[in-house]
Structures are given as structure tokens and as C-alpha cells.
Length: 380
Image (tube, helix red, strand yellow):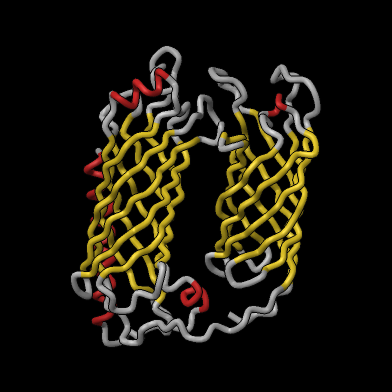
């Protein structure tokens, strides 16, 4: 089945290549003013699994052996005047499919679908050897989840579906205009955001080797670092509504709704960064059903940083300190962190997902819809 999945995906990708070539051969075809350079990657990886000091977990790691592979379709803007292409030195964005095996039935053979971003350290131009940093975020599936009776060894993950995160440093060597080889070293993490306990998370240190094929020719006009217009700083007020669910007790099937509202004032200081301060209010209902006592409402002061990857896509990062909290609501520390992805559907309306955690231990996934009040004086 895994080979079948790979075959279908590869077939669809190469069907796209053929269609693209046929369109270009059509005499009526008019080349658009803004195009994308497309890349197809095939990568294989091997790596170490990280333990957490738990005896059962360490035994599971010692009896497992990790291998993985990726198929990626990446896009790179060829428009030399695009602001964010200049700011990030011609980044790659795209989607990928991941398959792996741990050679251990207790963990399973998970797959993942994900979005990725690769940003070069410098403009590449015609350099043979280049270096970048890369990140991927998506949804994994096909784990064999923890079960007290049928699978008690997998103390890392209590769910078949989990989030997928991969961070790494990448080296790329160009053999010619079309073909290149790459190597990546990094960190990979699987977690379900405490939607089903246990959720210790599965961590890997993978090393990846791959080959990349450029599917269409690079435009003759190379992107230049050029002069980027001076950024005019401006203020924003963000209102966000968080929604999610949480499993409070291992072995309990019931998940409980959790919600919150955040209001943040931010200052966008350049094309990349917005910084500010705000307030979060969380509500964790069903106290009686959960057998919990105390307040179901908690509040916090939040320091916010938003990293704009494009005009619409950005990474929200937060570090907060509670003004009041209740450990019965899963608020195990006096502070929490937040990180994720959000996208501006319109100039002001946005949506995305973040993970709220206490010292690295997940609280819940925040599926978020928000609205930003601002007036941007910059031209893009």
C-alpha cells in the first residue's frame, strides 16, 4: 500500500510536468508576467530516536530502527521585483508527502502530508554549493497508538493522527541547470497536542540525502538583492478566537472543549517582524464532568512576535505569564508558549493553528480565526 501511494503521487506530479510542457508548446500560449520555478525532490533519511528517561520508552527505542523518505513539490517565484523574494533571498515553498518505518509494530509506519519552507542564507545566483535553513509543518497519520491492553509499549503517543514538525539545515550542490543533490540535518517531532494521552511526543534527529530536479527553466533575468523600499512602520490590533479540545486523563476516551480569546497590540517594525503585547482569556468548561474543582477561566499577559514569511503567511510566536490559572485545567506552569502558522484570507481576516504548551508540554491545539485592525502604508 505504501508503494502504491508513492506511485500515485509520483504519477500525478509527472502528469503535471507533461501538461506544463504541452501548454508551452501551444502557439497560443502567452507567458504570464509572474511565474514559479518548480522543483521535484526525492529524499531518504535515517536517524536516531531520542529518549526521555522513561524505562519503557528507552526499551522501545532500543528495539526500533528508523528510516524515512519524502517526495516534495516546491515553488520559487521568478519575479525579480517581488518584495518577499528579495527579503528572503528567493525562498522555496511547497508541499510534501512523508513515509517512514520504525521496524516496530508498537509505533507503526506513519505517513505525513505537510507544508514546507526553505530559505537560503544568501542569494544563490549561479553558485554550485549553497546553504539554507528549512522547516516543515503538517499532519501525520498511521501511528499505532497507545492502548493499555493491546499496545502498552507506545508510551509516546496516544493517537494515530499527530502533528508533524521538521526543522533543519540544508546543503545543496548543483550539478547542472536541472539536477542537484542535497543533504539535511535537523530535528523532527510528532505530537497530538494532548488531544489524546499519553502525549510525551516522539523526537528524532534525522540525516537526509536527496536529489532535486528543476521542472522548468530558470528565467534569464536573475533576481537581484537590489534596493528594497524602506519599510514604513505601522500599528496593528489583533483579535483572535482559539478553539480546541483536550484529554485530561490517560485512558479516558472523552475529550473536552477548550476555548479562548486573545487581544494583542503589535508594531510591525520591518517586512519580517511584528512585536507587541496582549491579553489572553481561556475558558475550560465541564468542570463537574471532569471531576475538577476551581475556576474554569484563566487569564494571562502575552508577549507576541509575528514572523511574516510573505505578505499573507506568518508564524505567530508568544510567551505568556498567567495572572490566574488552575492546574485542573491542564495549566501546569505559571507560564506558557505558543507557536504555529496563520494565513491572511483577506487583508484583515486570518485563520490558522497554533500549539499552546507549558515548558514544552502541550496544552492543546488552538484552531484560530482572527481579525486584524491596521492600515498598511507600504506598497508591495
